[in-house]
Image (cartoon, rainbow, N blue to C red; front, side, top):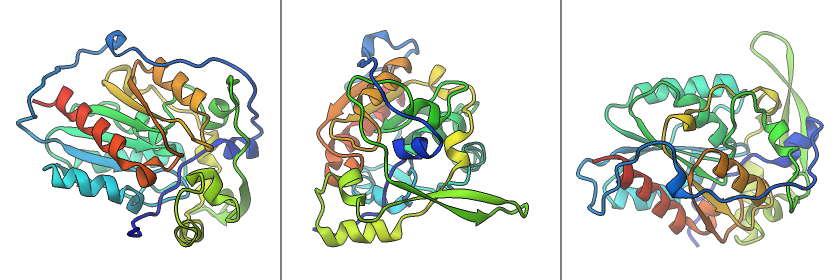
Length: 286
């Protein structure tokens, strides 16, 4: 298998480091017909191809999107995959918002895992963003933190992610806390052991740490309250509980699909990811 990966998303252990725990609670799927935002549906191919912007999550970099980006490029889309700084939700969202302002024309904005929280804030007030697509991602409401979401009771909880804290120097001279994932457990948690061992080990070795600020900061007014959204639930996710994904998708009134795959489903099963992004593009850009 061609080695294309470098992605890992955010998850529950970060919340555990912040003091959160999982219990039992609701599970829901969104009804596309209940979506409160008008969407222009058409069976014809879009005449104007939007730019697809792919935002990665924690313990990752943009190359994790490679299988999806390659297929979208083949289908005629311009694809951009900017770096997500992973230093704090507010500052990361500002960075991506600034990036989006430099793109002309319609945008389909896609986020995976922690990247979903970033796009939720980054898209606010940008009329070029026509759709939000969440791939096994956080979709916070105003006032939510990722720690708080991960502590929400669900019917089928998952174990906390094995996140290990360490210190790092902040630009202002203070000391911050960042999280990395136990490399020995990386493959099982993020990939359900579906990739060859050498690829999983490389991903674990190359992971970028996530600042604890990203876990504890509260989200602002969500872009999904005014922009149509789509959501893919990864049914074998060991990083974000699938029941939590269903809850967030239903709350956002997202057009929701479910697919077999682990948290890094864009690496192990990219076809439904690509299909959902194109569905969002076709429905919103004419």
